[in-house]
Length: 69
Image (tube, rainbow, N blue to C red; front, side, top):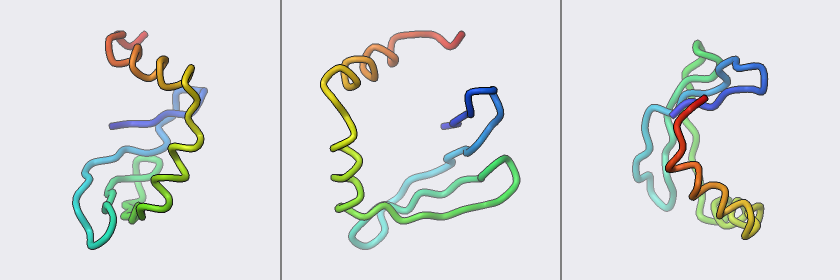
């Protein structure tokens, strides 16, 4: 999965997600060069869900069926 900035530049590429103790280990590359590993804890995942509104959840679901521009 790749995430890009508004100008189209690649910011992060997530290459894998796996179990890690009481969380998830996310591995990838930042800006196409720097390898990174980050642990997502349950409390941080819950905090992320607080950022979502109903309208945003509907938009995310709709994105699953759209093609890239």
